[in-house]
Length: 531
Image (cartoon, rainbow, N blue to C red; front, side, top):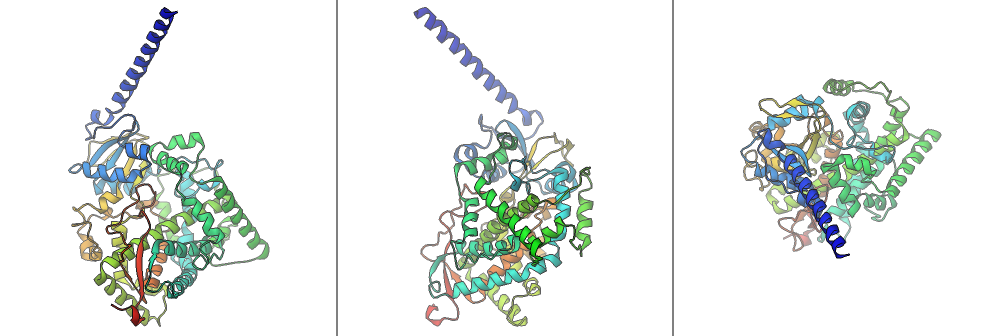
């Protein structure tokens, strides 16, 4: 009996040794990929590669990408590993330009693999690749032309007025308030109206049904964090496991709401100047393309992609997916940008006063009203927003997958199909080579003279090239209206509850702070609150 046990233990030990030897050999071979190609690399740690904290602690991989960017200082590229898979981190703006624009036909994929049959809301523009992405992008381009954005501008202004009325309430004047929540409610009102055609009134009713369902999208939980990390580190596994960032009950709610809205409008001939109406017109092939140059330009940029033999139809689920990503992207990124902007203005009262002076001067010229044209006359506001996006980009990293092998121009680097490319947005934005004293908030970095001193692809808050954020102009518009509504009559100041510097939340997908953003709001026309 004892001899049999000894034999069993011996066999078990031999199996364990073989497994460990195979494990060691597998990762030794995997982690020699970049070294064999003469690419500088950093020692990975099996089995996590260079992303241990992302996998073990649920940290946003963008923060580790930023640290890797700094570690490869002096090199144009760096070789890293996601688990055992190779990725190439870019530091050179010319190479970034090639990836995003010149060689776009080799890098049109973000690396996400979605199953629209399992989760229809995943079939949105941000996630799709290849011919599906191209066909949808061409379809959606007319929806975001200047003329169509102007159609929705009235809704943005009405929400801006609601924000002003909210700030006028005695309970808020002179008090320290959590501005991120207020700005999130303002953004939610805009997106609810423009994307879904419903009046939410979140500023008056913070517990509105739409707001509560929207919260569920961003509620941090283990499944969401795991899926977010896998989407960046091992996207094919997400497809295999049939998991989605979107909880099923949230998907059912948004899809039902879109279906009911579309059917009601079509049955009762209801028309509104909003995104939903434009999507209905796309579905019914009645959209009047008034600015065809936008479409022609995009088609020229994406000619490298193969045409699909299957006609692309805008179905109810396609509408729901685009309305949903319009909400997700427009709500969180805009409210975050406004929050960080107000924080920096509170820390820099001289910049705040200069911006307020410009706002009031331009508004006076337009009869005290915020008009579409007036926003584009506020040159300093544009600089302030850009500097906010530089210092606090909502998406701190971007990814692209190589879809067919290519040798990168001006290098000895040949990327094979399937290798992921990492673009360190936060790293670029805080590189003293492009932005001296990067932690200083200085809107004059975006004067025409200063911009000419930098390579163009050192500023990537919305990406670049054919996959640049299609809703960029609308997002900037609602951001600027929100800032104007705050600053025209109110001053923002730091208080005892303001954390300086802000503590960034390392686990959120969109850059944000731990514990919110607390600032003091003072009505400038109320003398009792003057210093």
